Length: 311
Ligand SMILES: NC(=O)c1ccc[n+]([C@@H]2O[C@H](COP(=O)([O-])OP(=O)(O)OC[C@H]3O[C@@H](n4cnc5c(N)ncnc54)[C@H](OP(=O)(O)O)[C@@H]3O)[C@@H](O)[C@H]2O)c1
Image (cartoon, rainbow, N blue to C red; front, side, top):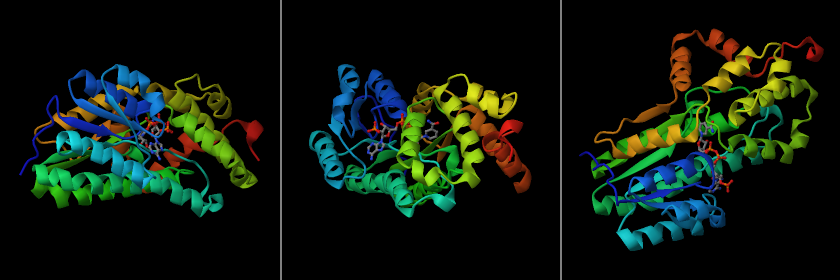
């Protein structure tokens, strides 16, 4: 049984719409006639989306009552949620050796269990209605790990496995589950990453990991903010690698278009990669021997070549 594709007018609930991919997707779908329920932890930041026709609700994916209330509200008006887009998520970076298990738990609570709970709440209504769509926003970090990103890439691997299992469980009810996997997208992601790093600065003081952390944060900050990677250039002599990644990063609208495709395709694919560099990275990961792949990843992200930092 194939789930009917979502059509203009049908209700779409999206988590994490205050910024970035969630914000872009809410605007994109609303402009195409969908009844979009844009949600955020602080709905007061959603005025712009409200003025563009979205209905706004408070929803924190770590707070069950807010999740139940949001789902009930949509179901009261429409019978069931037509399309659920699990987008809310965040990232922290830390060496595994110094990262507290509490931080790991918190990240999984949002990125994995938040998504799972939303599916549990939406599915009874979708089954009763005879179908629906679930789009989970994963990451290329769900295809391979990156150093200092064990928590984030671990959570995105878990999300990919949950999505895969769920897809096989609910297809018979007319519910299609799709995983959208962006590469680097310029959003608030890096600001929240920097905030989390500052909050846990004490765990980051290990001298042993300082050069890797310095390089990683300079590269990701440059890439994701779209700013000139001056710090990355300084640390990596000519900065060609950081520059290549900066050039590759895309805008959130690109992700919104792919999510729209997953929502409207008659037979949506199980997975959609977003951006050419994401597809190239996944192919390289598949083809290269593991050691070559890991050496390339480290040279991009965690190796400094500026001798002033060599120890
Ligand atoms: N940017 C990238 O390069 C990239 C690449 C691959 C995958 N992704 C994935 O794309 C998704 C969206 O990220 P983004 O790039 O658009 O970053 P973003 O601009 O930081 O947006 C993340 C959104 O998630 C929300 N959020 C975080 N914790 C939440 C919670 N407990 N409950 C509800 N909402 C919560 C944030 O809300 P607040 O404003 O309240 O914090 C924000 O609206 C994430 O799942 C991320 O892992 C991003």
